[in-house]
Image (cartoon, rainbow, N blue to C red; front, side, top):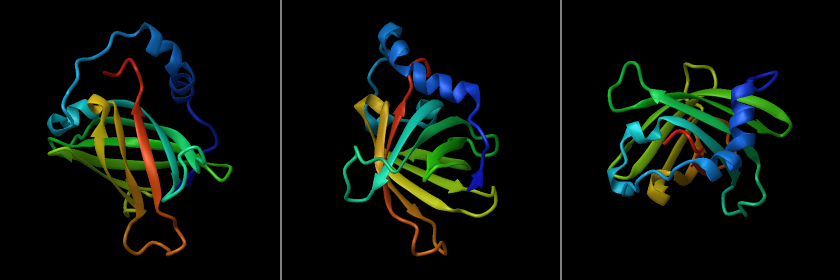
Length: 157
């Protein structure tokens, strides 16, 4: 992943202000996880990653992910991932979809080659996604498998 010298103000504000927005926002209708479509993914998501088999409270990386409509593939999303890991700010491009209740995402740290694959399932009416992030084929064996939780931030329902 590329080093990114600082986080944009909109990402920091959304992450820090999520609690305040949750208290004032109206709740969205509940969508069954099997009925989640890529449109439901649009918006800003908070990310937590931790080692496979580990405790979620021992977070290895945190950040944000912004999903938008994919400009080339109908029924898909594209976005930007920004997170911290081991004291570094990292950024990557992502694209993916959700089909029949299965969430799939490809991550690329250079915009050309795949660096990781995310697979998970929507929960909590589609406001949360949990699963496993694994290095893409051909990546160093030292890259860990990470469990993840994506939580949609209020205001993007």
